[in-house]
Image 1 (cartoon, rainbow over the protein chains, first blue to last red):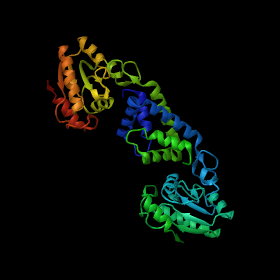
Image 2: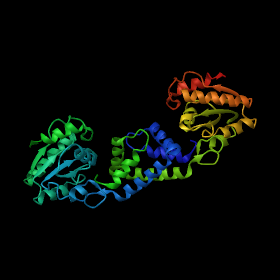
Image 3: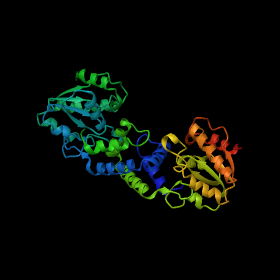
Image 4: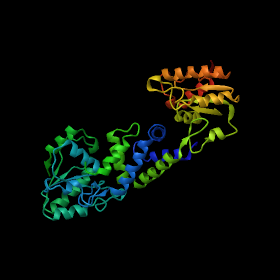
Length: 197
Length: 197
């Protein structure tokens, strides 16, 4: 309306999750009026992240390196692999629980209607890990939604075919909720109380 | 924790108003997992805005040019100047009312304890406009807070010294609220019902 660049900045900010037109405008004005150094820092961090952050070749976690820090850590229990839907779930588990095994990040869940099948979830990568004999237990920590449960059930079949024990994190995580937003105590309890499938 | 670049991006996003650690993390993961082109667009728009957007030399509105589009528009009523605290207020007034005069943006309000005096609000610039004889009425649309009222009162004295009529937008804007968030109808009504000081 009055400045093409401000309009374009507001549009770009609206692409962020949870940011509507009003918040985007407020953010744009805040940066331009009061916090230009914060804006410059955001440009630098975002450019660097977009350029450098890729996926870990073993677990598909967001990572600066080919193999992420957790996969490279020899002190993690190599026989335990926890399957989650998103990197945010790994963050939540690391912050709230004493889990010391490894992860596998699906970056989604099975959803045939959206064209998301086993390939999109990197299940060939997971199968090759299950096939090499190091994995003793696959902990299924997909979200307790319909799609998450279907994905867990599919993963159980795969693990069984490779003779790998599976477990599902316990109830305690409210059904229908998103793992990412569960409080730490509930999440920790869910890990303790996992049941054999 | 697991990626230095992701950590740094989350930190940078927390500088945005209304964004806490959880939202910042969600935004970072959203961009890196699902919307890298949106992230690149944000880098471009933000860099361009930081480089190109400055202040209008007449009204202190955020502007791509030395003089903003509203100040340059000969069809706006040159004798009317509306004083507001922030660029967001100009946006709100332009969107909600039929006001066709000019603006002056204080970028704040008088607040001696924070070291914000007449100089920081660009009142020398406003006085030179009041002194050149084109301004017939100064409409005071500062926020109906203690500081906004004090600023309005100070501006009334200045305008009186230059023989310029002043008015204050009408009640209808709830006292203690922020102009930026008032609904359009109330704001429009407040413009219609402004009273002579």
